[in-house]
Each structure stands twice: as C-alpha cells, then as structure tokens.
Image (cartoon, rainbow, N blue to C red; front, side, top):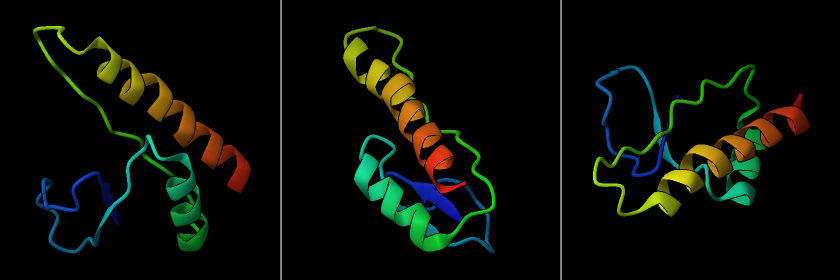
Length: 77
C-alpha cells in the first residue's frame, strides 16, 4: 500500500494500492492508519526546493509531518 499526497501513481509499483492522505493532516493520518492496521510504516515523504523561498513548507513537511507519523505509530502500537 502506498500513501501519497496526490494518490497518483508516482512510484511504479503495479501491485500496490494508492491512497491520498497528507502527513500534515494528523487526524486523517491517524484514522487511516487505525483503519488499515499496519504492522509497520516507512516514512519517505519529503519536499525539496533549491531556491529556499518556502522554508516554512519544507519545515512543515520534514518536521511536522515526521512528528505526525511518529506520533501515529507510537499511539497505534
């Protein structure tokens, strides 16, 4: 199962299902993971912008998003 912010097949894995849930939306992420009952989580979400015009976006995805993933994992274990 692949969790993507767009639900588009950005990663060519033919046997996987794609779902759209943002790591920034804690409540949606929690409910999704609770419903699916994962045995593990691989967090690969990230954002790169070379111009550094949007440092807040990078911070939110890398720090807040990772914090949300870790919090969900901790609460559901």
